[in-house]
Image (tube, rainbow, N blue to C red; front, side):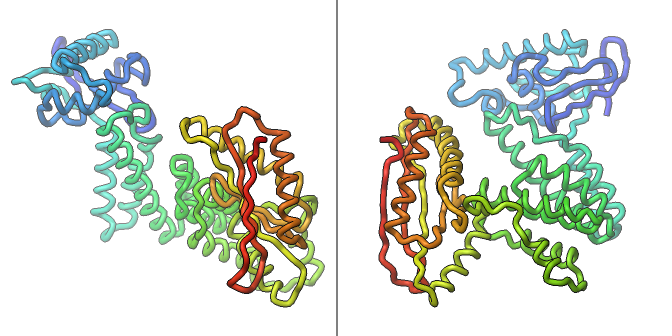
Length: 424
């Protein structure tokens, strides 16, 4: 598309980029994000460019640009002043400001004589082309999807998402990007393009780090390209994110691809007992066994089964960090993260070989104490609290509570619940 300089008749390309950061430029000049030192100028430029095929009223523009608490008693004057500042900013950047913004009949409108290319519109067009070509030509669909993906260098104008209009587009294009990655990934799998699949998903997890399916595609790609250790590492990273950051307990897709990964690494070969033992042996056996919740759950199931034919006591402990007061949510959130790190260190320091612990939620650890009655478990927890108190910030607003139950194969057991304050 072209922009016509009405002053001297020259024709040059103008492009607006919104993925990752704000950039507007042509063959002669460009403006980078932050150069105008005003988010509102960037917002006005983007809003008018995207809505260039219609006139927009002052009320709609104001809602898109100003936050609710920033609303002015004179929106007409405020917008008029902002439009003036935009024209001046464009003039200072060597754009022809007369070609950018005009006011007609009380509406603000992008000048019809100015054509502009916007990356989000190209993104939409390539995806639509791919979806149209999908049933007829996978190669054409792949090519169009690849062009769309190449445009995505980050979320839509993340700095400007403090108003609903920009936040909505940010969420929409993030979701569309993720769906496009998955559609292209399936085509790569169908056509055996696993190197491309790895490149696609490696980039995608930078922008979307919490999607189980994308991690599964990445593990599959690395498995198919003989990068077995990288595949295992990716699985461990994904599981940690699902378990610890998101609290996702059931990871069906990850588990499925992990089973395939195990079958690929072991294959149909036979191994002797020494080789198997070397493969499963642990490098260090010091202290508590820290693991993800899914592994903890399997260990717990085993211990419950063992309790049916054993009199050795074991205890299950749920340790919860809670704020004493809820009047400062931002500080409480920060203190919670710090307290959980301190609690983890206390668990590692105080628990023994044979004990098992896992993070259960953003504020909880679950612990399995071997050869430990409920009374003894309470003593163990008091040692952990002492360690915590010795380490943590005494000005913090957090307390700790712990619940103890015996490990038993019977459904009806007595609950021995304890509660202690972390700070004395």
